[in-house]
Image (cartoon, rainbow, N blue to C red; front, side):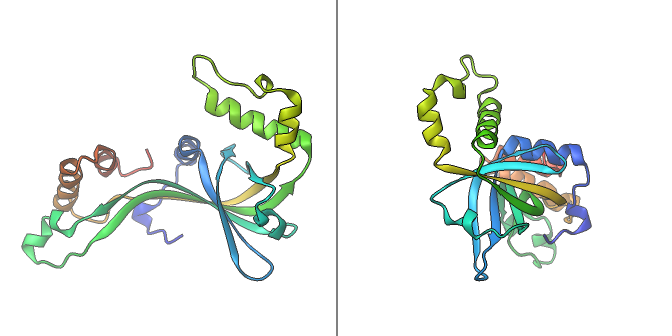
Length: 206
């Protein structure tokens, strides 16, 4: 990840909370032929070393991951276009161009494929409990017929990323002047993008 110092997020708690809120990431792995595979997956990350997810068994990506192969999970947050017309400096010298603001976390490490039914059942249960939490009547894996669940588990394989590197970036015009940042903030509000406007104010992953 290209990570200028003014966009870097070094707070582990903020990074883990961002990943928890987004709750999905794109698993990217190289295959033995040099081609790269990518799949968007629901994920759970403990904020330290363990990230778990699952792939459809019919998805060839898991077969192409070698033992101990390296993977990258990209967790993408809000993003928004920046018009140079919003910058106060446009009127001063005109030396402005469009750009894009965004928040993202990259998690890197070795990938392990799991085909054990008990491991898969636990991960599916954990993912379900996480997303159903807070509902008035949360659905549970046990609500479905056991034979049906067993069949569904046979249709997936698990993946575990042992995280060895975390990069967190919030690019929200931190490198611009206060006047330019105010202009971008106003531009987002005028476009009805309150979410992006809030991130201009905070400059973080929240």
